[in-house]
Figure 1 (cartoon, rainbow, N blue to C red):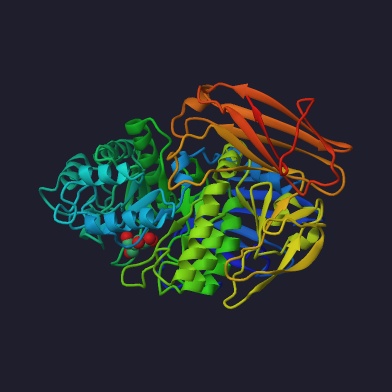
Figure 2: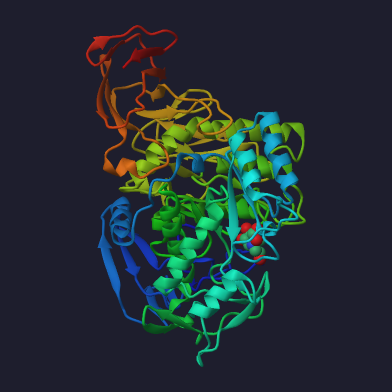
Length: 625
Ligand code: MIG
């Protein structure tokens, strides 16, 4: 939950496959960062210590909180707000921002353990196109590998990986492959031999290479503390990218092991300083992610897409996190919301959960409700475990398929807005936020676990109860809100009961704001977008607003050198609606026109665009640029 008062947490990255509940004191990620609000003033403490650390928020004694670690330095940062948003911004100034991702990574992603052999993956991809359900990405889980040897392919299941990724590419799909840190002990296997020869694997205290069991059987663990090892691991990414792979999914990097946990005294070489597992456990995954990110960046010169499970403070620099193995239960859908909001407050803007739930069997109703949440999480990936009930959008009945399709399409409609927010958050903020992040003056928002903000302008209040067809929605105080589905305006600072049949997820747009809309496409990049399509949400009274629409090539780092366009809109509603635009053009693919759609526009006021009156047609108008 958002409010941690009375709880005690242990920071030790842990892969525990039993279904997590509120009794879990440790998870896959360890981020020793606490935000407190007292008398409406927020402050934060970041305890930069990656030994096992503990945060006790008044469990021992309600008169105090404490934090501490098993070893290491008492290095901590006290960050004063008084706004929560400022605390988060300062925390990410210290630990790093979430970089702008490639545009396609914001599309819908389909995963399962496992889409293998290749015919199965192709069949899934074709079904998306036949059914006209948008999808950008297909994942390959561990079964594409040759007996779980990392950086290899099982050529019986995938005869020609390059031809396979090419075929998917021609249909508009990207392929992302999983990888684990554990390297199979196997003389003659290139990765093992190279690592062994160069001393790239962690050892026991006597200097013997340490072995444990993971998927490949007896395995050894790359020493990601060593920059040579990171370089080597990074270079190996080329093996995958030369075969047309577009992103990497780093799993099991807590590190997880089947034959008991790694002992505390396993030795790693931090570029000349020997360190133990006890010290580096919580950054093992982080360093693997760094190696992966840097390797992909070098191999492709594009913004790397790395999805990962274990994290420490700052892992957001290497981009995307998912919450690990959840279950297809309503409880886990409910819990995913405060988990995502907490991840957001921890500076990780590009996050998501396994939509539909990983373990156990999903139902059509649960998948429909989970998709409605997934539509508004930056990483939108449906994933399920081996042997569980199939969970693709069409795997249940026609009604479920229709609802899934409706929401996946809705997601694509919101992608330009999401991309604008991701661009903004590269400098400042998370995407998924608790309401208190934007509405700190409204105390009623502090304990809301079942609603969230999707960027600055969208409030999502999903249904997370089986059978529920109505939702109690709290609209924060500070502005009014427009019901996305019926267009009606509601004052902030009130609870309302929203009818929410299975195909309705309650969504509210902040008045005096803009949403940038995407086209109806099967995948990102299918059509050239020449017209910027903006919805302006107005209010009954007077008001003003501002929005920046952003675009660039959607994949390279050139935007860092000015190759991007920004269209800034400043508008106010008074006797007239007055919209002004400023452009900052640095990217050759400019928009040729802008279409505005006015929502909640009343009283036949005049509309001025850059001082000139425009004619409305059905509350729309278009300007050529
Ligand atoms: O021991 O690769 O969290 O997403 O499907 C399980 C198989 C290993 C755990 C990941 C999950 C993935 C699974 N992996």
